[in-house]
Image (cartoon, rainbow, N blue to C red; front, side, top):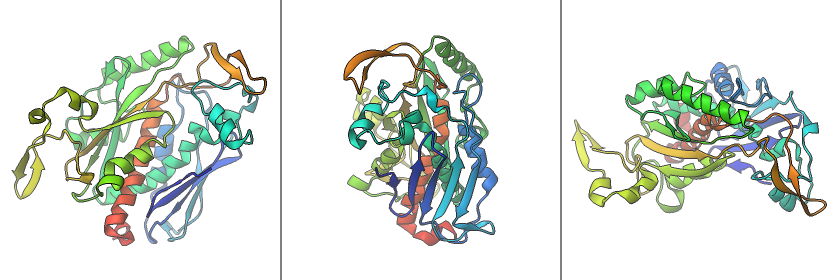
Length: 361
């Protein structure tokens, strides 16, 4: 099982949903970077389950840095973050009954039945908590360079949030939100929809839209190491992400080239594009415009309706009726995870371009 990503800044995840602890090791951070630990905790708090629209498993998600950090700064050695699990209910899981759309079957096959099945084990969204902590560190480094990241819930079923408008103001507003919607009316409607799905023992999915400001032109590589391919690798590591599109994305199919092309203009002494249909990326390389992409989060597969499945041990069909505590929607919690992996990917790309000392200078 390989759970490491990154070239210059590598992160390695470990742990299982119902194990003693979960965590991450970050390797490649320059020595002497000051970190705001309260800001890290604030990001973790945004991911935590809250209210009726999330699981009733309420973990504190208090993190501990056990190495790589001393006297308020990184030391240059691998930085280890640990988060304890305290609210497990392992009795709710029956290993031989394969949960539809979960990794139960593929994990059985790949790991010969030796995997920790409780709560999804290493495949659980629980493991995104240390990912958020690592991403919060990356975000702090990027923000000192003026690079800002923000994600809002663009759509849930037929309910749409408004588009990004005043980019800096919108990203600042989103940074303080638990339920990241720019239109308060859309927020109320989405929450009612999630609660209604929960009442029906069902779940819903959503689309997240992410904006990145002030990425320097020239970051990235063509073909196999493009910004799109790198970001996609990180984004698809987030459980329940099933699609990614950049800029206009799949809507390009509805436009002529004359409509889709981004014309170039001068803004003072700076080259900018009139539109941003390509989402700030040309040829896999940042063009200096805001980078824009969307991710689709599937409905939570853990639902309380009876579902057809297979008993793995008996090799026969049966009906599964789940017990336990599950989210009727996870996209509002996944939003901060998307911000985290975006920051980790961008930090890796910037260090590739400018070297490790860029993080501290």
